[in-house]
Image 1 (cartoon, each protein chain N blue to C red):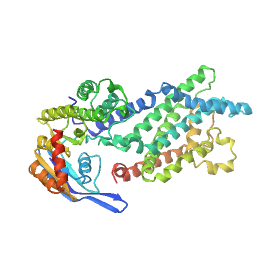
Image 2: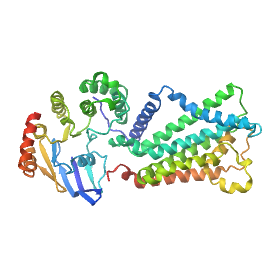
Image 3: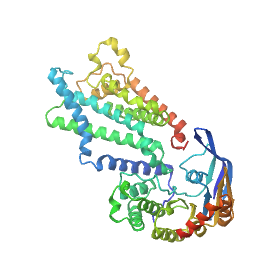
Image 4: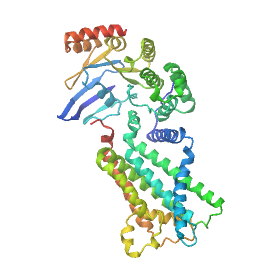
Length: 235
Length: 263
């Protein structure tokens, strides 16, 4: 169970503080895969980071008894000057995975990421697709109760997306996912419950479709059409 | 599958520090062929240059102690201090990516760096002492226990200082630009190439405020039996290092969330 209690988060801007969440309380249903929707700048990634414990709200807190992964996103988490192998070893280390376990994770990541010889090349030379494959493969290889996925899947090619979905459906037996994405089809396929962020409020919907409807109605028609088209292309 | 069994806080702390130190060693020494040698070369070069200058002038520093050894006693602690200083300021900004993992906070980055610097300092000192002894530059060893004490508290001092600096580096960027300029004058007034005895007593009142002077004096006293640190004050140094550590921990505790929080 993940519970937000009186969460307030604001950002400093040149025109005073911009409030992202104002005194938000919400309970995320247990054992469900959750999709988070919202316009750009609605605070999806920030919410994910707060849940992941790497960013802090101005007031309020997140209560949970589950092991939550770090948000797998496109940026951060990797040291560009170190090789993929060194980065994976480091993440294993801080999660207390040494020796035998580390070797297993290493093999698994290498197999999933399909970076081949690039595994021993500094990360800064990776393409964004390679980086996201590595990020996804790495966080999946470490065991958590809840995985936070922040737009990683939108960069890769079709092959990578299919692989991600395979892994997610496999992992869903033992863990849950909280996914931020703009591709509706992806959310429909992978999530049971939707959360819609708008105007500083967090709305927990009982199904993804409900949240998607909310999200679509808030959007001008032309953009909605475009969105449907792109998500159709995505799949 | 890498299973993350639930760990106690101490286990987590240990894993994080261990992983960070391995990572630091990779980035510092790994890609550079001269990496490990540089840890020795840096103090060695300082000593060679200073020793050359002063032997050229024809001055003997301290009766009974060869100049290179005298320098080593000053340079090695000072370089450790200097590294902690510069790394402390940059600790948060250069490790942004690391704070993507919740168990890794700025404290861990600072602690692991200070630990690594301390290890390098001690090892380079031992190796250089051995090298000098090999070439016949040696004196009777002083007080080992004193050395252990001084270095233990010196470590506390540098850790506290780094914690303060990591907060300053992030919260007061203007000040952190100016701070490195302090290092130059400190090099000259900290007794790297003099001993307090050689300074007229009326200036002691000013110089003795600097804890580094006492570190260096006490280190020499510990290293060389014939060195008599008449003016070093262990109790003052003890007090200042404990105070520095306390201030560092307090400042860090008051600000640590703001260091990683998106503003």
